[in-house]
Image (tube, rainbow, N blue to C red; front, side, top):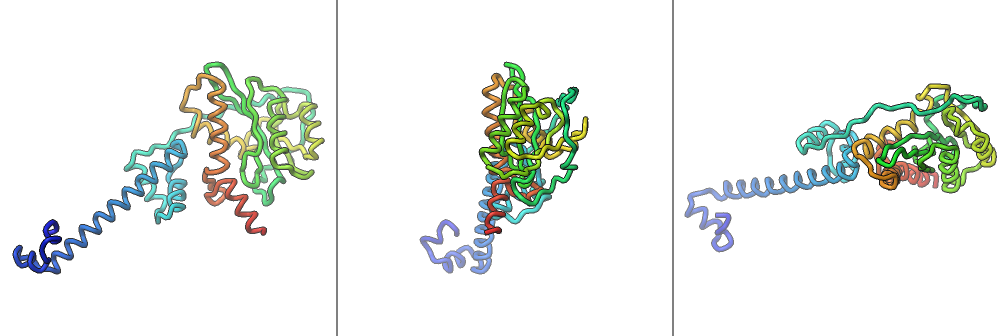
Length: 285
């Protein structure tokens, strides 16, 4: 009947087939509803898979739910978890963190002025910085970053094959030139020799920044920056063997851009750092 209804009236077809018209129309509506449901499910599955690919297999059910909600889907965390399980979307697992700070030096160190007060209500008031390392077949590559605690945005970074004072200095200079903060920014780091060096401390004074350092051997005093390194390694670098330093440099830059512009942060109400800052600027305006 569905095939022949274009050529013959439904009333005639129902009489020939001994089927009630109401029953035929009810069946037809069910078929249309089923097709529509399948189409919606296909779009949901496709969007979820694309979100997962864009996050480089890093989004769990919470972020997946928030990302899908941003696309207009009415879906919660547990529904997202079921969806991910059905689609076989398995999140990467983290490797254990390894401390690399060299604080065995006789250089002066600063007090811990930050004191784990990680909730900052204004941009360019507190910067945190740290160094980590990444392995390639050419050898180690060291990465230094500077984060604005207000939005968790990475505002400066630098990479080199050696972990000298110049490494974090380049990240600090990039942060200053990109943000142009006024004097009085609280700058927090560990007690590593690079940060305690005369050159680094002179640059802080030139920028009018106030130095704060974690207590010796206490990684939790700089937990937010270390959490960034953990996320980066879990989501982007731990699962690959890089042939060259140039390969891992490109990967790190790509991740930082993703992290700043698109990665959803639970602390920011599941917004990216850039979106969060822009929203706050609009509120202020």
